[in-house]
Image (tube, rainbow, N blue to C red):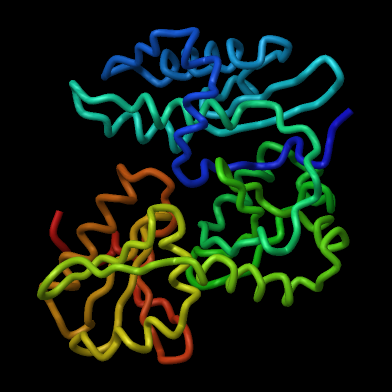
Length: 308
């Protein structure tokens, strides 16, 4: 039997120490992920940890893809997960450092999540992601990706960005699908508005930087969703020279500068290009111009001259 939560894409949520403390994989393995492992070796070790954590399940790679895991339990429950982001985190870990906690949080996502009490609309959040997410899911699921039980609730945004809706749990976010509309009893536009309100309301935004380029932080998971907060950009456009230019290369990184600030634009393009190459949880290489009412595409960082 496949429950309502099975076979849905999940992402790691906010840091939760209890995840690691309650993880059987943490106690059962020395967790040796020395630097420099090739992808296949790294993926095999993650696969081994998944089997330790869920011994009743059968885990395998999807069509031989080392970045996609498929788990199936004896009663037919299935779950899929992707290693792209944790692989990038591992690659960025310097020698002598450890990504143990990140790995434990990732492996915890491979646990079986049986049907929980149906979450309410108070848990729905709006997340900015790259439209490649839809293509990735379609590639894995084929025709099934269009079924109401598996088709993501996604809204076009600007450039290569989309907005998806998700249930926000302490240890993960679970992406909403079209069949959730009936469960929640709302129209797509109304649920979208509620998701935007829910994700933005608790965020405490801090600005970092001086001079030409600035960085916004808001806790480490939902910074990209700040693009949905028109009010904050109306305030910040007064602080830059020219038009306000903004980029969200990763889910936890938002930069901004002014269009008439040559140094700021060069730095912005350079940082975005670098993070699109090596960053985890990548969103988009697009640089956006704030119009006062919304966004328009300014260009892609890879096409602009800038600092490396």
